[in-house]
Length: 288
Image (cartoon, rainbow, N blue to C red; front, side, top):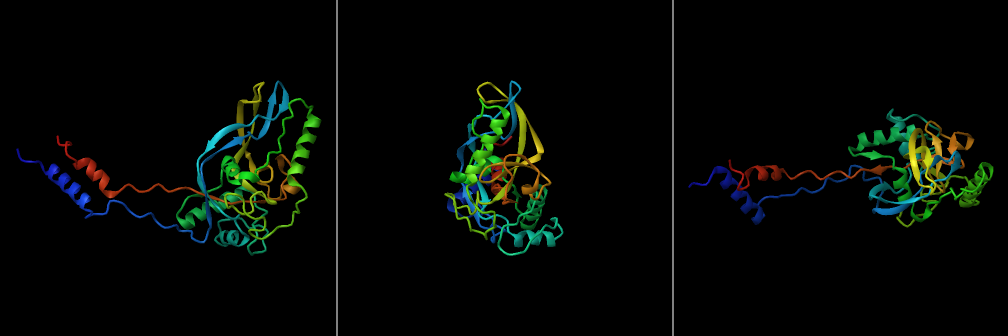
């Protein structure tokens, strides 16, 4: 019996691959944004506490944290600077905000401004950029992450509010609200600069509202995404159109000194080798 054309072609492909006569993989495309320093944050587990307004039997309570695995990701080493944001404004893609130029972080931006920058930067580079989730931000913050939501289950609402205020004040210490240039607050254990300095960073996380079981775990919750979570020395829930939370607009937590942001770059999936689909069609045993 004569071998079929498919069998002949498939056998030839096997021989060529074995001899290295054809290239079966493609080199990854170089980054289109070489001017941006990126830090690879490996996957890890965090103790995550849902953030927002929760009740148990009609009384306001703080949820208990729970362990969760967060996948690794690439994040900007530095916060988006005034110079970088000004380029987006000049392109007509970002709303103008107060800026003096230079390598200081861009502040006085709301969540919508940060989202507009991510959209523009994605178009500019041909890559996918976005704000981090609040879980990703917590993993990135590492040892600099602070939780200003102590267990206040036995306190009345007034004492509970004072306890949370005291916890937030303790975390903030006596840090000055004066802005520092990029790198002014040093690096954390991941090598990320200025995280948990005096610029809180917008995330894609939403404030939640819901009820708790008696053990403090969440019974049910609903996101309120017109209020977004900003990561900093402690978390804060800020109305998404607010640019300066120090004068109002902070829904939960102490108001931040400044609001800025940094972006996460999505990992591009490697393209499928050109020969794979051909091999699937032509491999021996696939004849009709």
